[in-house]
Image 1 (cartoon, rainbow, N blue to C red):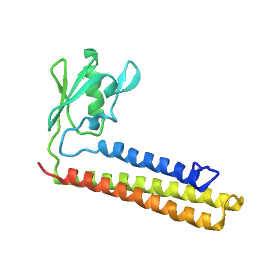
Image 2 (cartoon, one colour; image 1 turned 30 degrees about the vertical axis):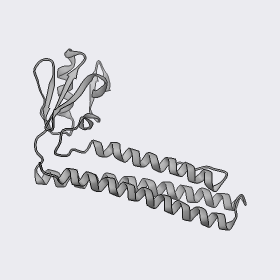
Image 3 (cartoon, rainbow, N blue to C red; image 1 turned 60 degrees about the vertical axis):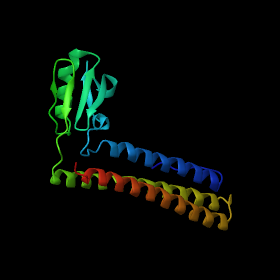
Length: 193
């Protein structure tokens, strides 16, 4: 657990807001790796290729593109790595079989079945909830920091109460933002066509 520090309620709030902002940004990155019916380069973000003994992100060794809404193209800068790239994709949990023409690895994104869509929505709900919990933990740490300030007689009881109320408003706004982002992503997953 990381503590939030500050010598005033405003400093504590500012640090908590920065951390909550990072949690919301991390949610966006996490959701980008969850598949929808459309091809997205973000699907390849978690894939690491064994590049001469070093696990290397795919984006650092190839040009990635989406020629259309149902396929991805991976053009390695070092053509000798095509086999390693295909191996990494097969080992990932994408569930997509790569093909290559000797220069470019192609991935055809199959249409999602209704069952797979439901699995992805469950995964999305779990990711969203983890980020909500993270924001609540930041609020708890900030409230503890405010309580420490009051105990140290650095702030009054009124400032303590006001600080708690303001932290709750900030938390509510972040949770609302997380929920809205989750709802948008869920619609994308369930959208057919």
